[in-house]
Amino acid sequence: MDPYLLCVDGGYDRNRGARTPWDSLPSRCDAKPPSTKENACMPRVSKLTKRARATGIIAGIVKHFVEASHFLGGKEYSRRELVAEFQSHIAAIDEVDAKRAALAAAVEKERKLGRQTAALARYVKMMASSRFGLTPTICADFGWEVPKLPGPKTVKAKLEGAARARETRKARGTMGKRQRKKIRGW
Image (cartoon, rainbow, N blue to C red):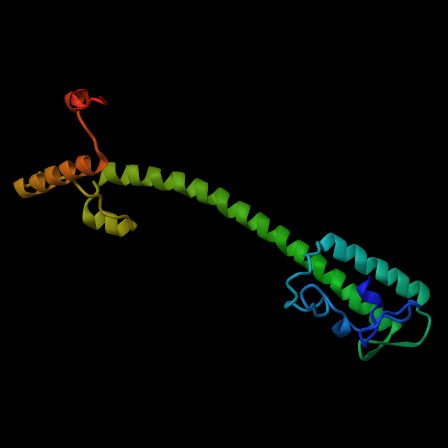
């Protein structure tokens, strides 16, 4: 049973009469008109399809709508106004395409420059470290972090590190060569 053939009162129109408004049509998800965002079960339509659909509608309006005005969706439109509505939609699609192309070009340019400046930054850091040394003041002037220099470990730090290593080996079940040989399966 085609949902478009249902009458407003819910009965079936056997004569295939005029279609009912969107709000009276039953749907899998209680769909609203296709232009609303609340309609989650309507599939996404590509811009190519939208452009082709609008172009076809314009051609149909120009060819078949010869009357002075048309009452559509609770509003009165002239033939020119209808064509202008669909033309503005096509223009908006073209504008989106142009802006996306410009965005893609700008992103590519930024990435290319980013790769170039990253290489230059490494060379500048090597030059600065060889000329001036990486002292905290020089690093601060260039906006770099001061490299952390490893210092001699204290006895307390060594004991804590050894205890952590033992606990890690125990938790993971890590064994040495001789410990593994002692394990028997029988």
